[in-house]
Amino acid sequence: MTEFEIKPEFTVTDEQALRSLFGPTHELALQKCQTSLDKHAQAFIGRSPFLCIGTQGAEGKADVSPRGDPVGFVKILDQHTIAIPERPGNNRLDSLVNILSNPSVGLFFIIPGFDDTLRVNGQASLSTDPEVLQDMRVNGRDAKLAIVVTVDTVFLHCAKAFRRSRLWDPELFQDRGQMPSLMHMILDQSSGAPDNEGDMRKLDEDLEATYKKTLY
Image (cartoon, rainbow, N blue to C red; front, top):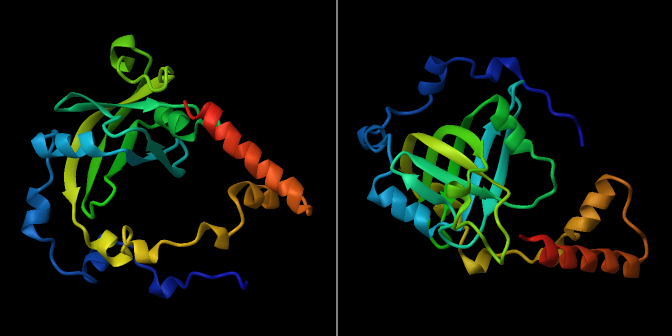
């Protein structure tokens, strides 16, 4: 694949040039931005089993990471504060390390079957407070810590992106078998996947077994 080169003459470099490409901001889009969690935002969070958290490190490098648990896993502490349980993972700790140096985070809440979403921006900290972690136990396992977010802005996001992608349309669901397994792809990117089909199948089975043992 030929390496792409950005053409400076077509690069948008200032806000005025950017806004000239689009129409004025809809008044309702400005009015919907809130500074606390009203009953609708709280209800949305209470139904959501999945979110993405965007963070940025001390050097400005951005990262987005998924978080998921049973419905309502994010704890609403008050109308300005929520807590997200941290579960076992690959121990890269990218999001957590970023929060230590830059507390600004962006959250994107998704509900299966809903085309509209909820966006929350705020300031995060990491807490091991037992009062915060209580009720976050799943399958007998406590959360290691919680990401506590103090809300700056919160607003419901329209359905256009999900409508365009038809994300929940079963007719567009893709066959996972059309791509290699996760383990196969990671090994291709690192030490190399085994040529023997049986060996690769065993590695895939081992990963599934690990999921069952270390999900919580």
